[in-house]
Image 1 (tube, rainbow, N blue to C red):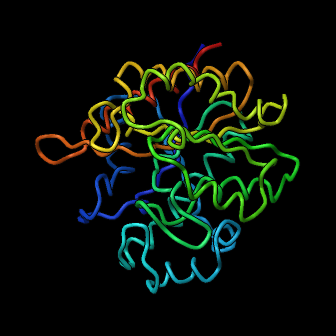
Image 2 (tube, rainbow, N blue to C red; image 1 turned 120 degrees about the vertical axis):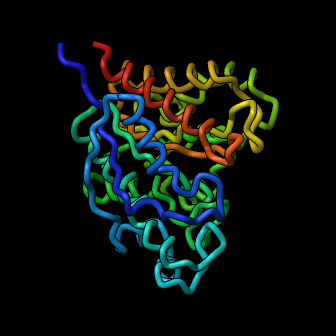
Length: 292
């Protein structure tokens, strides 16, 4: 049986070169290059950037227009137009991965971060537009009967996602489980004990309905050595990812995942430790994808 390859929705316009205003600013490119260097079986897939109308579905129109025109600061705290130009591409990547997973089943990857602190009309914490909700709302526009789950295993609370869901009255159509709301630094053991309930949170919330699609934020920042994390070992992170993908496979739930968080640096001030975590997430996704 021929091995399945992981579809990865990447475009070079998702990253800005030669800018060092935030850790891992060019992570999409660096992650994909790392996967290719390590001979991971991925397929690079093209996609369109998110349109303004798709961004407006999740965000205030004046906010979107202001950010893209450089009148309003982005999530990195600047008005750099080169940064603004990447933002429709990162949300577009998440949207494309979600559409692919829903249409074809299995797993798809968006090598992006910078979503879950973005509010309806404000940025925060390196997040400008909430690509998770841009993707979910685009799917719901065409198929309003869908039930979509967002599973956020970043170290930090997905406050922007919660705020947009409340603002737009989307509870019941989109469930949101965010580990960062309940687990603080040093609570790794409790996370592992509660993880299965959190993964199954969408079904529990809906009183039995399994989601039609899972959007999974595979955060690297819960790692023990992360300056903003401190929860999980390498092995625990691998088990976390394996359990998410296993659950989705057993429940026949398509999953689109992205690469959230991660602030470790190596001796050369690079992000090699973060890339290693994301590489292991991709390896777990591929292993699950190829299980019968």
